[in-house]
Length: 110
Length: 115
Image (cartoon, rainbow over all chains, first blue to last red; front, side):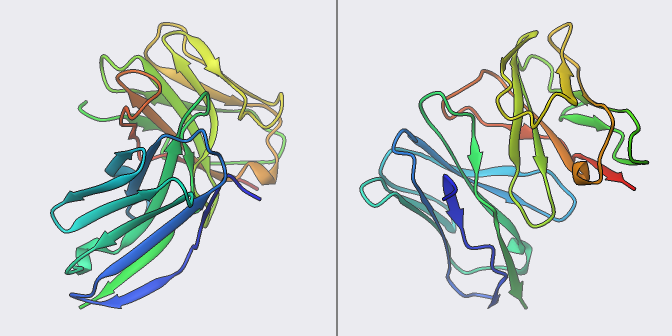
């Protein structure tokens, strides 16, 4: 079992839809949870991060962490075609380097 | 430049050849990371530097891979006797400090193809 599991998709939604992206993990030492966005042929860029359990909102994006279930989510409201990208969850804690999920490829159709 | 710069952006080589990939981090960032991303996969950790020293090289797949950062700024990832399985995008990232929630700033990657 990999440390971080993420459904690779692809996920295709109509413009304006609510998107839910998820990851599960096995390492209980993880304390910081992040979402990176990666456009085609570009490097990943940090979208949001959360420390420990809880919710964090930034504009149309909401990140949730449930450490008891080892489950994290990213919600995108009112999705736009410009949100089309690969979304990577990432986690760090203890002595581990930043560990990434496989990424979920999202297409938002106008 | 303002961001992490990686060269070359594309490299095609033949099996068995030696390759060097260069990373120029954001000025003032003490931590530098190398990741490898294969098609359809997330970035896989290779090594990170804090200053000039390799703080964690546990992700290097074997002794054909080596990285240096002699002056604490630019880093070079060196791959000897390349194999077809080394084909991937090699991503470099830097951060102000290592660990915690410090944001990693990634370059656009060096796409390596081994024929």
